[in-house]
Length: 438
Image 1: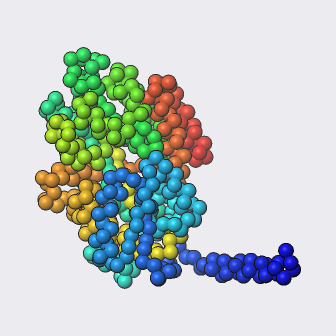
Image 2 (image 1 turned 180 degrees about the vertical axis):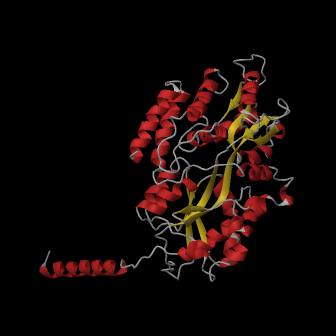
Image 3 (image 1 turned 180 degrees about the horizontal axis):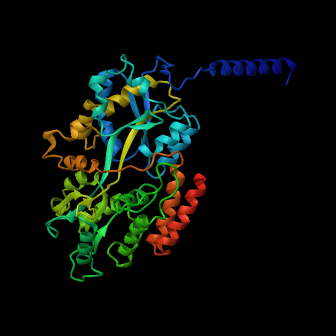
């Protein structure tokens, strides 16, 4: 290479470096309102997992664009790799999407790392949000980290019991009643049973096992960790009682012996095919699918009820079903944060919520869930409202993924009968306490 060409290439290289450096100077205040850096583009991108939620939210795109002039595109990622994609992309500072669809359990980790923006500045800016119309109090719940709102829910999820009303005229109210019915409708215990299994529930990872077990754990009076200091409560007597209950279901062959491989779809289809008589704890989202299934002669016979509970000393039934929200949060590296907020507020607002219902979604708005117009078409809405009065969500902690990994490992040993609940939960307790330094 000649000296002249070398000088030319070095000049270009230094010029590009200077341009990059100047372009990268940003004065970032997380609590200040982010501005749109590229006013010539009217497109925002939404990272979302493939499934019922993305199908329902797709119906909002065209009305949103007509209302605001902003074009929204969905970037869909398969369910199996979704959580890894969200964490990797956000924590790496990617700006390839503006909004992210995520469970509320991810809020603490991502907010603490500065990967998502607080929403309070958008909510409190009258040029962006009409507080009265938006009506923050209408949400069933909002998700905070250190007193700031970081995510708002589009969907709310909780657990019901599903039962064959042609076999079980009255739904069981306690877990003792569930066991008695499961004995009757499990062929391992009753060869004349019309169903192979009396009871089923999802137990796969990463989404199902810990969340499904949570409804039992809390109803039995146990818990994962202490809210005040974070030390593990899995070794406490009531937590052990819940784990023993699950293992006994497996030992008595009242639930499928390959339960670790049962997911949402397999559980739903087992109800529709007549393989199981009951499913609990099971997601509320399955009900509209079951109800609208034209191929199964059992779809109209499958009913829902509040999750069973335990009788207290006064004879009152205490139940604590699981609840979670699927939420939208704004990528801290979004170049279109204000437009992202407009889509977020539209999708979680009352207008977007109504459209979401028509597309089969479950909005997190009390006013929509209690609307008499849906009494006949969506009878599950009233049950969701009842469930949410006593429902509980998983702890909002920065080390949530690590906690779940420890619990899933312990539950696998319990569900496969590899370990006694006492041994598996003792190991999990020690691992959790080491994780938190307790």
